[in-house]
Image (cartoon, rainbow, N blue to C red; front, side, top):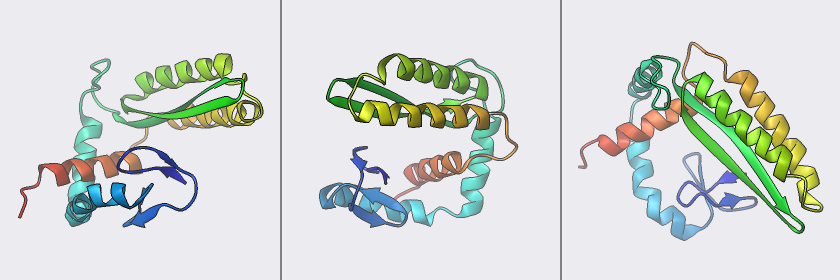
Length: 162
């Protein structure tokens, strides 16, 4: 299903859902429930404008202006009976994102296969996801939904509390 919005733990089944966010349990939901109201209160036009501002800004990794977005990649490593996957997100330009995605792909190729049976299953999936992300990391005119959500959360954090 995805990572818990509060602690980042992978939620495979069940969990608590609230306003499009997934939490691993009630405790994590309670920790962030107040913030969900603040996020929902941010108007779409404000979130879109903030995402456009971030997109037009400077990459924090290389200093290049423009083309900033949130890019994702997967790293898989295995050791006999243990297989771990890690989703990485990078806020930066497409060039920096492709470098990170390439490093995660190379690491997955080297370390992903060694777990039985999940390493043999998750490694090809991770490689395919990284390939898809590298292709889609080309410069786009509009901010991704991930960048817009990040902008919405950023505005909610900076909003005065009532």
